[in-house]
Amino acid sequence: MANANQVSLGRINLSTGTGYDGTTDKYALYLKLFSGEMFKGFQYNTIARDLVMKRTLKNGKSLQFIYTGRMSADYHTPGTPILGNSDKAPPIAEKTINMDDLLISSAFVYDLDETLAHYELRGEISKKIGYALAEHYDRRIFRAIAKGARKASPVSASGKAEPGGTQVRVGSTGTAGSDAYDPGHLVNAFYDAAAALDEKGVGSQGRVAVLNPRQYYALINATSTGNGSAVVSTGLVNRDAQGNALQSGQGVIEIAGIKIYKSMNIPFFGNYGTIYGTGSATNPGITSPGNIGNYVGEAIETSDDGNQGEGQYGVKTDFSKSCGLIFQKEAAAVVEAIGPQVQVTNGDISVIYQGDVILGRLAMGTDYLNPAACVELFAGATSGNTAIS
Image (cartoon, rainbow, N blue to C red; front, side, top):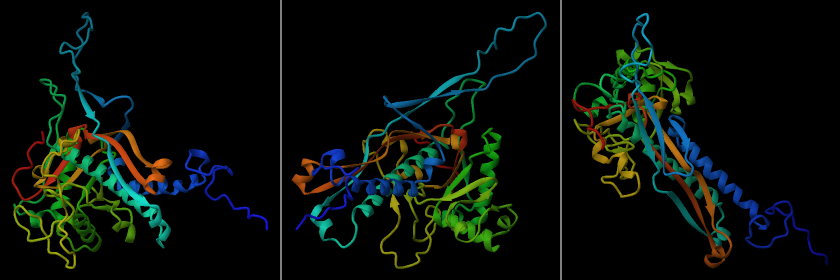
């Protein structure tokens, strides 16, 4: 009886290879699914990457950004030479963004487990790796923007100083629990922030806000049903979608020309996510809906973990009053030396361990760029968070 002619499902161009040896590997095509799933998981869960400036870094450890300050103008006196302003303006300053250490997320997949399982493993693992990288990415960018809102401009020459960041208080009762989620207070804060950005000469294009999900839903509920306070009803809140699109949190509501997004990754009173419990002057806790187990959000790091660049993003106590961000694209920049990538072991390693290590990796660094384009919302206190060193 003749041998069957097997369809070469995993081979590239009918290759004749039999082992784990690159392009002739008989399983070469099977890894493409994982790579695509990882990038899908990353892109779906990161929103900050497209809301700030992004640059690629090659052959270096940091990227330099140059600032130029203001110049003066005066009338010309006939007969006098024009040799440049006597103050030698414009002043020039720099901002350097350093690379962080390599970020990785990995899982070991045992061959026998894949053989016995009645469900597909690698696709699910790949998405979770993408989620982990995206979470890290957004959290660093959002903390950098909050930091920028508390900083002066790098251009600080006498008489030529550029404007720094802005902090806007949400509400005025001094009770974080009631102010942080109040639609009327949030709308007022948006208009204050928009006015501050206008006064500082920040462009109107690319202005966005990122709120905690509870804040976002409080806003769309009030603006959709008309049940909000009077300021919501008269606040000229624009929305360009209804129904499911409106509820998706993908920037379909505008207040004062600022598109609003929701994210669990903004610094929110020292946490990422929602804080349940009794609201107070220092705690924006809300009543638990029940059946949530012990979930109380994820706390921001309480100390610098020693990794390159990690300390610059601030720790839990630095964000004890934060409750939202409003910014323009120039607020921060992210530099990538290694974009989100996937690596999978093969060859002798796979034989020895009878399985594969699936690794997602990312090398990036981020920091505030133009403090004038950064606005941090805070609640429950008469003054904002202190500067992050």
